[in-house]
Image (cartoon, rainbow, N blue to C red):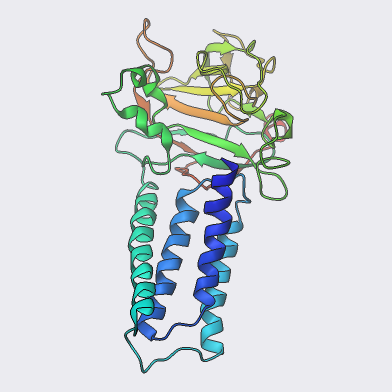
Length: 324
């Protein structure tokens, strides 16, 4: 995974930016090359998970792209009198730019469309995090930015038991450098910024289920049988809120207990089907009494009125000051 991330999020953007700096023999070729690179960089910024690599790096690439274009104008390296490329190499260069433009626009458009909530009724909840900075790793209204949406496919039998998670959000923590952990992929879950982060009730309701005995795994070990790991399911009246992959021994509520808005639930861990510490949260209708716990009708959610998608950031709240 680290090799793939490095190739797509460091090597490829830098190679493309160097290509933009190189001279073109025509204005048309220059436009195709620069627009193609710009479109692909935008698509990478919107579609990729920027958590191993700092979340702000796509913005830096954008500044470099603008700088490379400005360099051509300042150095007067553009030939406005020649519209079309000449020679096989220059036409190939222009064709590559056109392909990058088409691919980049397709993926970027699909990701932008994912910012629109699905047509189902959307549930509003409060920000459940305590102090800290958090990054959406998976979320939105299209599968290209939210991998959970594949469980809407009823033709896959195993997805039926997990269908309630179809509009889920996954959160990473973000440290001062803008990355999710100390190091690229440390084994110790405590090295991840979100590990141990406090979670609070995003609504008043009743605890339907609570599990706190599952172990927190070393990265990338996971439990694919007890997929939720340590978790809390909170019934808020018209919907259930599910928190998964919580920290062993951290949950401070019990099934049947009524909780108030902002009441402490527990902490983020690395239990269940979690390849690294993160919070999984989703909203669903209550499933039938004899059905799996996350098989209810999935519902999109907004946090503090915002429909979050991959790449969005969220600041935690100081619940202790707000609710003594």
